[in-house]
Image 1 (cartoon, helix red, strand yellow):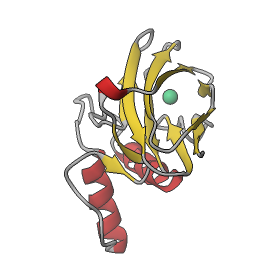
Image 2 (image 1 turned 180 degrees about the vertical axis):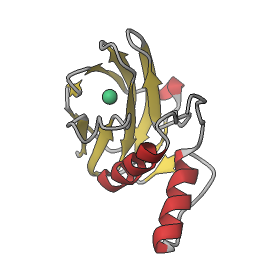
Image 3 (image 1 turned 120 degrees about the horizontal axis):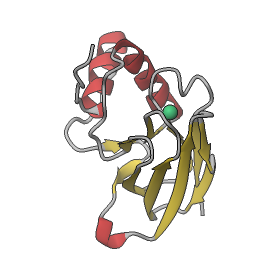
Length: 156
Ligand SMILES: [Cu+2]
C-alpha cells in the first residue's frame, strides 16, 4: 500500500486497546500520554539533540530530565531510510508497534512523535509532567524490534 495513512496515536491506542481489553479511562482528543503533554515552544527548558541511524539506534539512547521540564528534541536522521521518534510508555510503544506492522505506510502526525526523512531534522517539544521511566522508539516496522528504542528517566 503506497498511500500514507495519517492517524492519531490517541485514536489508535483507544481503538486497539479498547477492542482488545475494553480498557476504561482513555481520554481522547489532546495529545497526551502518560508521559506528559505537548510542550509550549515558548517555554522550552532546554534542547536535546538525538541522532537516528540505519544501525537502528538512537544516540544518545538515554536521557534524563526533571519533572516539569519542557524539552525540545531536535531529531536528526543521518540514515538512508525513514525513521521516527515517538515518546511513550513502554506499553504504549509496543502496542503501537503492532499497529504499525499492520499498516506499514502509516505516518504520525502527533505531538509526541516526529517522522524524519533521510538527511532531515525534525522536532518534538514535550513537557514531562511526572517522574518515571519512559521510552522513545522508532515505530517504522521492525525498527523497535531491532533495538531502536531509548529511555527517558524523569527524576528530580
Ligand atoms: Cu527507525
